[in-house]
Image 1 (tube, rainbow, N blue to C red):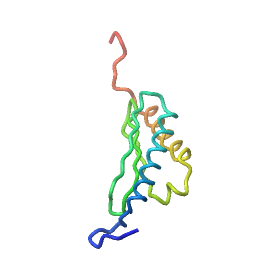
Image 2 (image 1 turned 180 degrees about the vertical axis):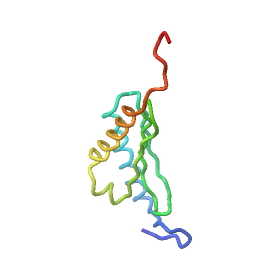
Image 3 (image 1 turned 45 degrees about the horizontal axis):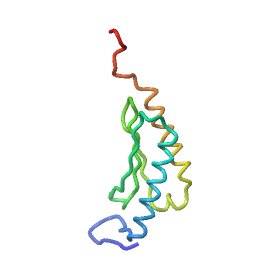
Length: 107
């Protein structure tokens, strides 16, 4: 990894960015498979003070967005299905514990 002297986090090479993006895409795809269509799943690379991370976010039908960020080392060492299962479980829990804002029909 190369370091930018003006930045606290390490700079990733193009190959490392490609691997991180592919890992985020794999986690997002597996997360989509685990959740119903009402859950919206997305991924992006985010640059922060700790360097670049892949972030997968889920918007449940009710509740707030659930997201997780992970570094290249986590992508290389972890199973995308394990990360996806944790994110999907968090999103499902958020949806279950948040009352819906819709009124029942006929009210």
